[in-house]
Length: 321
Ligand SMILES: Cc1cc2nc3c(=O)[nH]c(=O)nc-3n(C[C@H](O)[C@H](O)[C@H](O)COP(=O)(O)OP(=O)(O)OC[C@H]3O[C@@H](n4cnc5c(N)ncnc54)[C@H](O)[C@@H]3O)c2cc1C
Image: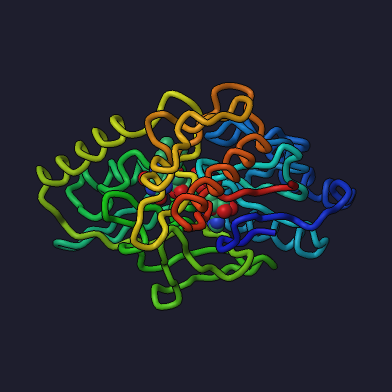
C-alpha cells in the first residue's frame, strides 16, 4: 500500500499475484511487465528482494489503466522512481511495483519575460531539470545539485538541501488516483512539509508544473558549484547508499546527534555507518535490508540514550518485512 506519509509501507500479505492480474499485465504491457524482478537492481542502496511484478507504463492512459486493474483486484501498488530514498525488504514487495517509463521524461518550457513555467514528467531525473534551469538562466532549483532520483520522488519527498526545497516552486501536480482516475492538484491543495508532501492515499504523480524566475547566471553557477563541493567533502559517494537515513529533528541536525552518539564505523554485516557522515549508511558489499535496519535501530537507540531524542527515518522502508 503506497502512502507518502508512512515510514513503513507494507502491502497486505497476499500469496503471489492473482492469475488474471498477471495475464492482464502481460496483455497490456508485454515485455514492459516483468515478474519476480530483483529490486536491488533498482535502488541506490543495491539492496532489496523481488517484486511480484515490475511494470513500466509509458503514458498517463497506461498508468491509469494499470491502477484501475490493480484496484479492482485489490492488488497493492508501490511506485518507485530512482530508488534513492528507499530501503526495500529482503523479502521484496508483494503486488505491483510501478516505474514510470520514458514517456514521463518530457520537459516543456514556456518563457514569458522574467518568468518560466516548466511542465515536466515525473520520470525526469531531478538533476537534469536543475542543469536545464541553470543553463537557461532561471533560478530556484540550484539547491538540487547532487540530489539523485526522479522528479516524482523529489516531489513526494519535498527534496531539499542548502536551504532550498522543491515544494517552493510547484504550481500544480498531475497524477492518478489509486482507483485509476486522472486528476490535477493545484498549489492550494498541496501541503509541502519538511521532506514530505501530503498526497491523497495511493496518488501517483505523473507530471508537475513549476514556476521559476530569471536569475543572475553567475550567482546561480556559484551556488551549484558550492553545493557540489560540499557534497564531495561530506558525503560518502564511493559506496551504495540512500542519502540521509534519519530526518533532522526540530532545531537539531541528525548527523550531529549521531556523531556525538559515536555511531561512525558501526557495522552489521556489509552495512556500515559512514566515517565521513554519521547519518549515512553505506553498503560495503552484500549488505541485507535486515542488517541496515538493525544498524538503524542501534543508531536510534544510541541517540535516544545520549540525547533523549527519537530520530525518525527519512529513508522509506518498503515491502514485506
Ligand atoms: C547520495 C544521495 C544524496 C542525497 N541527497 C539528498 C538531499 O540533499 N536532499 C534530499 O531531500 N534528498 C536527498 N537524497 C534522497 C533522495 O535522493 C531524494 O529523496 C529523491 O528525491 C528521491 O527520489 P527517487 O526518485 O529516488 O524516489 P524513490 O526513492 O524511488 O521513492 C521515494 C518515495 O517517493 C515515492 N514516489 C516515487 N515516485 C513517485 C511518484 N511519481 N508519485 C508518487 N510517489 C512517488 C515512492 O513510493 C517512495 O515513497 C539523497 C540520496 C542519495 C543516494
